Image (cartoon, rainbow, N blue to C red; front, side):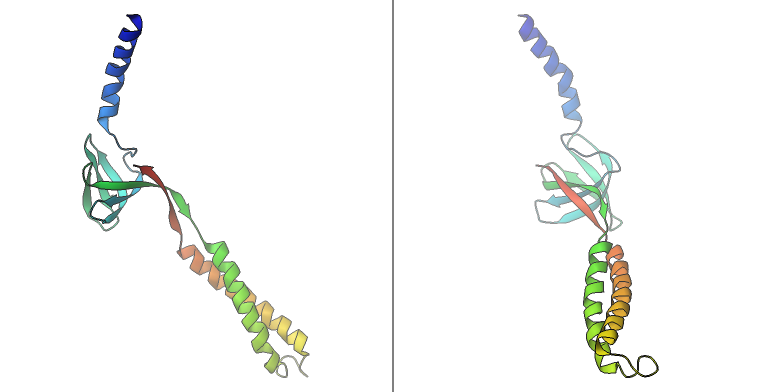
Length: 152
């Protein structure tokens, strides 16, 4: 009898907590919601209710996410920058191009010209330096959210 009573108390106490919101989101959390229609809404949760929640979308509009319209909920776990990857790619590509393009112009480098190896090294150095800087700037501009699926 005591066990049945303890289970009944546990259910009665925990039921209101679960009835507040069945969704694993909270106010001011960045979410990406996919609706049953296939529409994606990205923004911040502005309010949470028992049957859904409101999203202040990145498009400037407020969207309602009701339980019967939801297909998937993803929560942002922070933004990641891609500057390192783009800086490395930019440095490699432009270093190779700089090395190849500097060899035919070795007569104009220095007072009496330089060897093909020296010209290629100078071209690779300057090409890699500027390509890495430009690639890093492009990668920093391409930072993106890391999404984690939390529902269903």
